Length: 631
Image (cartoon, rainbow, N blue to C red; front, top):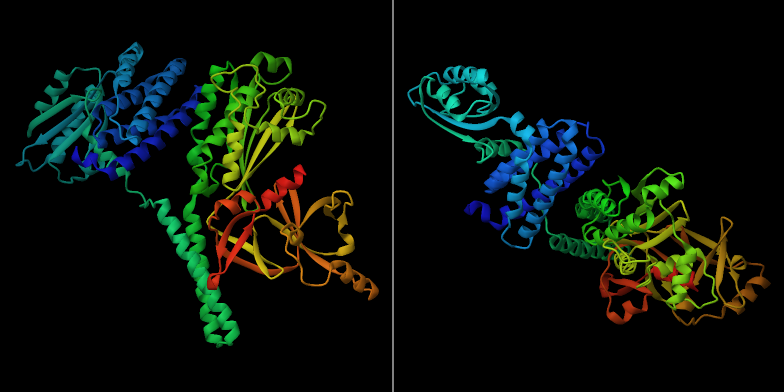
């Protein structure tokens, strides 16, 4: 057992156990919906689990998993519901085992004994299954025709049993490959004594060890696990190590840009510039590879949700289907770890608040089964995760009334749907009439908002009463190395992330609209007003140049139209423009955190360090966007 107790082995074992449990849940959900469908996927998962437990030193679990596998393969479609229920319990216990291992605790196997008792209740299973034996046969060292003796033995056994597997495989035995031991796995209605007699009567057999596979660990499973492991090697890299590589790459990027600036100033040779360009391409390729290494398919956290929705639906007496698309899309490792809780909250809300009871859905001429769709798509440099249900939609009157009762809005105030959506993410606002095991405490959506904003994302809500509710999480793919647009405002350098820049316009001053009362500015883009942020004014950078009024008067007298640079930044369906005096071009940077004072302002999301040690603050466009909406 010492080999099984090493930390490295336990980590690998735990990882595979977690993946197999998720596979099992997915397969059981499919089988529950369609009992007549073949259960090959589940059988494969159970077979993999059996081998895992056998190799890891858990004979009791290996034996039980073997029983589950045989039960599922022999039961008819009429008994599937009962078997699926048992396998779901088995899956839950495996998850408890995984949680115990993850917490460094000694696994509790008492519930597995209960499952063993339930297995015994399947009378038809016991009759149909018969006896399953694992037989280890040792031939005499002096035997020169072991292959021939083995073929004779197997022929005799096949008259009384079904030979399911041999080690070595039948192909090697028939080819005459030399071996000393034979392992046979078979199923038979005969008892142990009858099978033992057949083996002992075979010439040159000096010993035979026979055991029931329901009560012991099969040696062949260890062999099969090792045979199946011949896959491409994967190396697991810690997130901290990847972060350190990103930091070092950032330093190389800065050094390369510094060398380029020196080269341009000193007018270095063509050969120098070509080698520098090659260096920059190599760094860029390494950068792309490291970012790709940090990406993890969302499937790693999504596989648990179909089972969760199924269980929540049963508790609520609702019939719910969860349809997931785009689960292969990858996001940054540091982001994916924080998405589980928000998605859990939103799916629970969709089941509890959104999907109606079957009788109510039929009255509304809907299918009695509700549908929740979890769709993942790329949108520019973001990932959009949409949770959309075909339920009752948001009750805006009820939300408004509850908000007024809580004092969140004045009594006589009427808010737009978008403003009411924002209130949904306020702490302690819940429109449910009673607190349930699923929801109703008003502590979910505000947590969702905090987590999504923490990873640089935002949330959009859309709903039509009686028809649907859609919540979209818009999150960045990666938060490591970022491409930014460098700006200059009164000789002060700033940066804005390139990820969501829609376009850069040059706009005549007379096309910039200004509200005389609020002093806010905007422009018309594609027949739609877009609010503008004048960064010079907003950041209180005093201009040493002549006033804009005097400049404008001079321009008008000379019949020349002054123009401004406008950077259009888009997040989801929202657009915001930034008035910028000077654009300095794009560059790759590593974003570093800023101190508490600056972070509390909300204006900046971080900072970066340029060659020569210059610190450049990075604007947070999302904060400007939220401010402009609520203004």
